[in-house]
Image 1 (tube, rainbow, N blue to C red):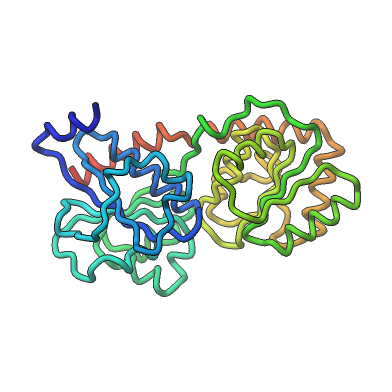
Image 2 (spheres, rainbow, N blue to C red):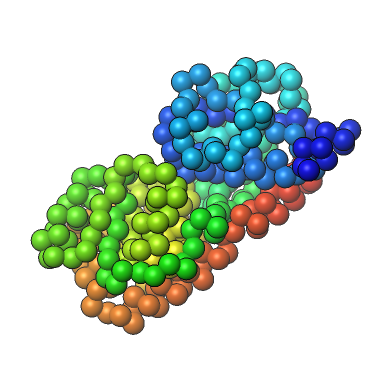
Length: 314
């Protein structure tokens, strides 16, 4: 239905997404979401190009992208619009003329890492995935820059499953040393704890969150809208997550989560113990976190994206 509707509109604009997919990241989820939003817009005809070494077909992140929408050649001149994020600027020609580019920015580090910061000077219409990211990059950007928050897939991440009381899930891919230390210390206390340091299909990750009572997620020290805390909150987990700058809008210490100091093993352990021994605190954070997660819907992200398109692009 969408396809025939799009093809019959003479004002439809072809938009090309470019992605170098190495392993599943939050950035990939965001680009996928914007592709689906574009696919459902009556004035956009989206396609996506994956670099030759991308193993996208083996990841469930991209399973809802129709095969006919994946193109084999990077041919920017064949499209009206381009959509790019992060270091995928590398694959676009240095001179795009008057071609309109939508650039999604996902991390505070874009203002700090020389290569990423250099891309901020390329003409584009930019979307930051949190207010904190916007505040970091806005002084360096060329062109329009607005905030459209990251979003949670509530069909996948929801709080309808029954929890295993006092069970603990540690998501430690970004800090495996701390994650392993936490896991070993908690196992010595005979607690029900599970360690996850490798990427999982999104459905399997969601199933682990459904069961977990306490979710400990370890971000890097500086990043953008770290999505796992929101996904944990949506699954009614009690979240423990350090400050990563870009997560400050929803990770609020003592309200929606507990925030130990970054990379501090003892403080992480102490806060987990607080939750295990203070049921009132645990339930307050669980309820507040779930309520916070409901503000980050795909529907709201889509609505804001469409407003952005109508204002600047279409």
